[in-house]
Length: 115
Image (tube, rainbow, N blue to C red; front, side, top):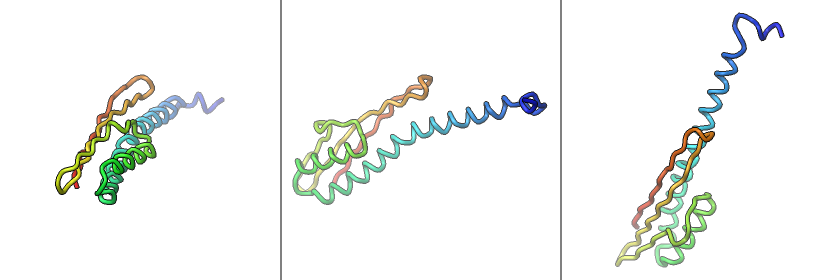
């Protein structure tokens, strides 16, 4: 108990650690949706190169990948349009991020790719 009442104090290091932990946790909460977006976008590009012939098959495969990445999409949210020599994939979704109930933000993501 003597070290708790020392001149250096006990509250400052504890408060610093708590603030640092809150910042790291908030960074994790905001970083994961961006990581999932980039990984999903990369996978969509790869799927477009593989499934270039069939639009419905591509939509189904992209939806399966979205479920793997835990992206809140419905299959109807994935728009695959076929032109003469190309395919276009358009996808948009939003993710709500809440940090301890103190800060709330909605992040919007969009993928618009053409092969």
